[in-house]
Length: 402
Image (cartoon, rainbow, N blue to C red; front, side):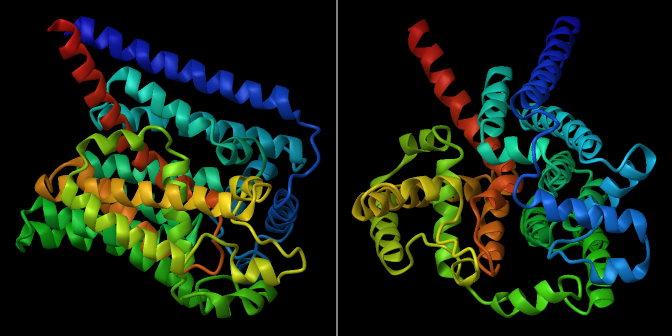
C-alpha cells in the first residue's frame, strides 16, 4: 500500500512540476510586457470598471456578453495587489497551475493510468487556445477550472459540491448550463433509469445552479447584461445553428487528436454504414463556416478560429475535404462511444457522452461559433481518450507477454 501511495504522490509531484514549467514557459515566451491580446483589452477595462465602481449598476450594465464571476475575481485580485495588467496576468497563471493539476487529478480519479493521464495533460495544454487563456486575462480558464471540479465531484458522487462548482462555471460562461441536463441524465442512469426518493433528492441539488443563474437572469432581464452588445447580438441567440454542431463535432476530433481516433478499433460494420452516410449528408448541408454575426461584423471574420483560419490557405475543395474528414471521424467516434456508454450506463464514459451530447446541443443555440469554446468540455473528452490509450497499451503488453 505504501508503495502505491509513493507512486501516486510522485505522479502528482511531477504533474505540479509540469504545471509550473508550463506557466514559466508562457512567461518566457510572451513576457509580462506583451501588449493586450485581442479580447484581453476590453476584458481589462471591464475589470477596472468593477474595481472603480463595484455597484449593482455595473453588474447590470457592464459591456460584455459573458457572466461576471471572472471580472469580479480579477477585480478583487487587482484591488488587493495592483490593477496593472501584469499583476492580473499573474492571477491567470495561478489559475492555470491549479487547472492543470486539477485536470491531472480528474484523469487519475477517472481510472486512467499515470502515463495516460500525462498524455491527456499534454494534449490539453498544447492546445493553442489553452496556452493563450492561460497567460492573458481571459474568462475561459476559470470556467475550465470550475468545470473540471464539477465533473470530478460528480464522478466521485459528491453531488452538492459538483452543483456548486457548476454554478461557479455558469457564472463564468452561460453555456456551461449544458452540464445541468448532463448531470440530470447521469444521475438518472446511476439509479438504473428508475425514479425513487434517493434520485429525487439528488436531482433537487441541481436547483443550486438553476436558481443561481436564474436569479442573475431575472436581474439582467435576459441571459446577458443589459448593454449595447446585447442589442447587437442577442437576436441571433436561442435559434438552432446546424453549422455550429458540425464545427464543434469536427473540432472535438481536431483538439483530441490522436486519442479519440483510437476508438475506431471498436467500429462495427453496422455503425459504419449508419453513421458514415448520415454524417456526409449532414456536412454537405451544413459545412463548417463562420458565424453570421462574425461575418456581418466590422472585422468580417469568416472563420471559427485559428485552425479554420489556417485551413483557409488551402484550396477550397481541399479545405472542405479536411473538415469533412474530421466531422466524419468525430461522428463515428461519437457513435462508438454512445453505444458503449449505454451498455454501461453507470460508467464515467456515460457521463462523458452525456456531457458531449448536451454541449453540442447547447452550443448549437449560441450566436457565435468559435473553436476556443470547446475548452471546457475538452478535459471530459480526454478522459475518454485516456481510456482508449490505456486499452491500446494493455493490448500491447498482452501481445508482448504472449
